[in-house]
Image 1 (cartoon, rainbow, N blue to C red):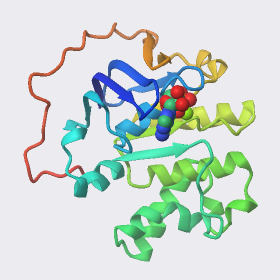
Image 2 (image 1 turned 180 degrees about the horizontal axis):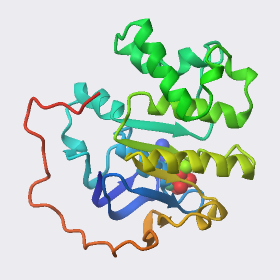
Image 3 (image 1 turned 90 degrees about the horizontal axis):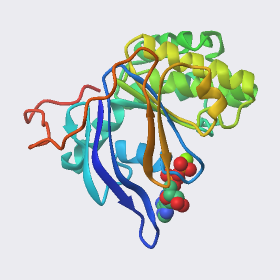
Length: 247
Ligand SMILES: Nc1ncnc2c1ncn2[C@@H]1O[C@H](COP(=O)(O)OP(=O)(O)O)[C@@H](O)[C@H]1O
Ligand SMILES: [Mg+2]
């Protein structure tokens, strides 16, 4: 799960990118994050990954206070979160398999296991038959599905996506949304940033709306209970030392 408690972020010399933001996304929930360009969506996602640190407030991800994770343990946080970007970020000179199996290779799994994991992740996005292709041989929609397979390969508890449909036409965009809904149905927490209101209106899930760094609306999923009020915890929940976020 993801919790923000009165989080503010100001970049040096800039105005507030996030201004007193509080919300909670329960484990297994699907949530859109929307708002105009410059509203603070990317900043919010980068704070979850500890690519940035807030000026004030607390962020708790999967029960860990993100600010208190020692520098050397940050890779464990990042491996527990699958990330998908607007521009796919595939490596052109590597095959689909090599792109998708990046993390298992990094973790030292043997080739047989890398192939099994990559096959399974690619099967989920309908592209298991393209393992040997290079990214340039694929359409934009297919490249984004490869990037989604890469994000899923370690079975992360959380998947976050930053405008993943921004480079795709509307039909492909809807296909990508369906994939993320499928990921959610299998129990993963999904946070999906997009400024495309049309895409959101079709899907009856929760929508957090940012404007000028503030949350200005929090539409709950159809049929869901209203959000519980968020209070700052007396002590941020911490895992006992020695226990790792699974990789
Ligand atoms: N690294 C940075 N340095 C300075 N200002 C930044 C940086 N990143 C984002 N900002 C500013 O923070 C605000 C929010 O940006 P961002 O989070 O990228 O919004 P969005 O993703 O919703 O378009 C904008 O005013 C942007 O110019
Ligand atoms: Mg952005």
